Length: 152
Image 1 (spheres, rainbow, N blue to C red):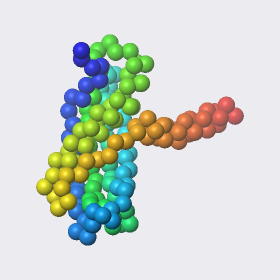
Image 2 (tube, rainbow, N blue to C red):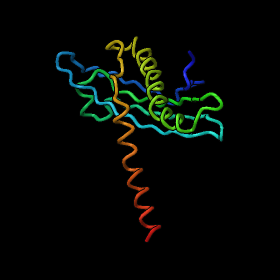
Image 3 (cartoon, one colour):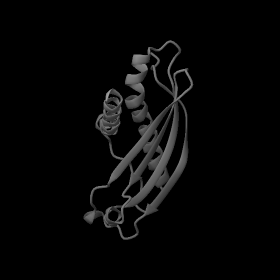
């Protein structure tokens, strides 16, 4: 059975990996991961582009006790079959598209670090439900403020 959401293509826009030569495994801390994303619709057809940026141990403090510092910007192109209901598209693109693209990012990072000083690094699992909720919260507040101004 074919999935409703397809990733048609993707490309890496930026990739930087820095190994920490002072890293000691026994003293390691948690890797600090931050993810940002943007979803854009292309035309009226159900075509989308998701841009995702992932930073690991971006701060100097986090990098002191971590094997790697890395940055990845990845773009994915997604489509739905013609005739897919708009309600279904809205439910799926934000969550499923991000999960698919992050899975691609995990493979890219693992492959990029496989021959590095501290060996392969696998991005940790992420709760995208919470990530999407956090991003939607400021947008909802802005929409409410705009609606209140218009009604005044």
